[in-house]
Length: 208
Image (cartoon, rainbow, N blue to C red; front, side, top):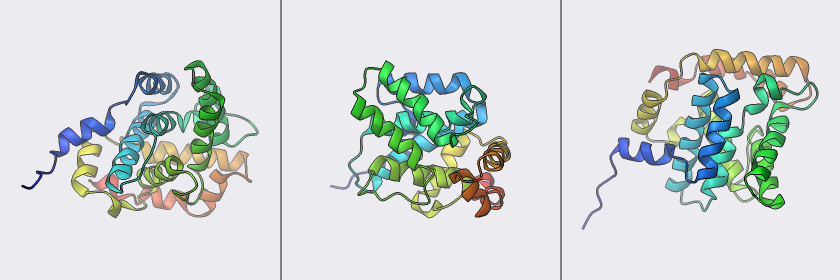
């Protein structure tokens, strides 16, 4: 007996859905301060990360991963944009406050901080941090088009159709460039020096 593959629309519904009430509230919190383009990026990143983890057979904390994806860029929002701290660190500390308010332990809240900070690393080993690994890979695809062959093209097309990119690349590139200018020692500055804006402009997801 063979198992029929799940329809793409049903799979997309599943990976986009918050796995808990806390995850749903994290998405609501992100929506308060994020632009529509940044919020859609967070939602696409969550779906990509969850789908990748499942297909690669990785054991991951779905709620932790989803909350991290929902809140990973809140440090770019004006109310939380630190003058000194890298945006991922500033956003991670906002996420820590959210997690504490949601009743998470200090250890679990620290894991959330770790995942958000590490998503800006050039790479994250799954052995070190499986949720950080999945979020880094998902955001790298959505921002710069890196690693697109790791996902089925049908899923990518359906995801972009459900959550259009609508100028995300231009907006995000401008925000990260501003971070790089103000914080030259940050990971944002490293990515800009490494050609992020060129990769953003060439992202194949914008042509799906």
